[in-house]
Length: 202
Image (cartoon, rainbow, N blue to C red; front, side, top):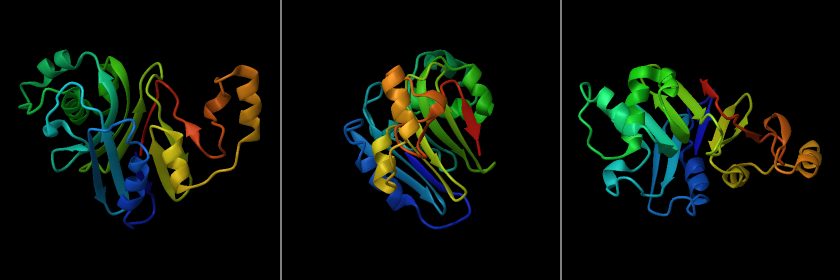
């Protein structure tokens, strides 16, 4: 989960804490918040590959930051490609994805095989990259307006920050096509499903 206050340096870490409090069922093993003025990223972790705390998220080297949901299937092959540049301190795909994004930026998406939704902040370039896997297995939802971008792996944490009316057109889609609501809409006005196989860099 994350919040970017586009035109403000106000603290937003408390907002992200509220959001990840609603995601405990997705990640009961650890939680973390990273914050700077105007931007905060948070994560609830379900430990699978590396059970140590070194693999907790948000994953950072003190500069760049990653929050990541999913699994990178070819992370060992990517790690071999990156081993000459980095000493890896974990046995998890999170660190490999983190280093791949540092080296290749959005180009890393052409090399990744897996299911994922992530947000990556690169401090020197001052960029925030959001991406979702090619098929759309891992969920990602957003609210965006002129003032802020808010995103989460579920809709419920977004509603915890900002109650939204029902989107009547989406309800018609839901009953007509079952889950296949068109054009990235959800059942709530202003909450959009991030498209599969897409990324956006702010």
